[in-house]
Structure formats: structure tokens, C-alpha cells
Image (cartoon, helix red, strand yellow):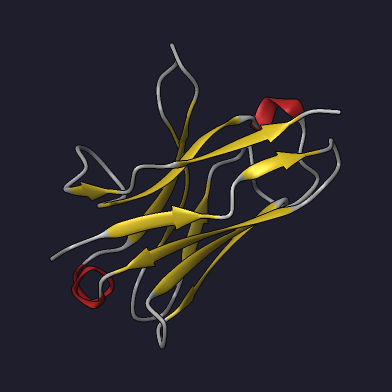
Length: 117
């Protein structure tokens, strides 16, 4: 069964760091580029990054470029989102989904990230 499951969210102080994980089934990583997204209630979702295969190339939104890093562990079928220099504006539900553009074929349930002092 195809699954995406995020973990690693929580409360972090401004300026802090957090790493999110997205456990994916093997067929997803073989078939799709994987995207990280975030959503705040009442706002449009925002695409954060998209990591493709097989070269692992990554595109980032301007809002996170230089602060967030996406990587993939193909051995464990996990995509990571390393976030640093976090600000309250980064507070959102973060989730992974495929494909990176348009309607999601599959997505995880999301993990809450709250940046607050």
C-alpha cells in the first residue's frame, strides 16, 4: 500500500532548527519526485521543495532558500526536510506529497511545526 508519513514536528524557538522526515513506500520514490509543502489554516498551500530522482536534484521556494535543505535516503525510503533559522512565519502544518505540481496523488497527514518563544 502506498504511504507517506511525516514525523519530527514540534515547538521550536525562533532561530532554531528542526528536521522533518517523510517515510515513503519504495514505489513512490521510484515513480515520483517528492515535494514538501506547508499549509496554514485559511491560506493556500505553499510548495517548499521538490526532490527528484535519480540525481536527487532539489528545487526550493524563495521563502526557504538558504534555510531549508531537502535530502533523500534511498536505503530507508525517507525524504528529509532540514529547517534552520526558523521564524514564526514558518509556523504551519508540513506535509510531503506527490507529485510536486498540481493535485496530489498521495500525501501524508502532516506534522505541526510551531515557531514561538
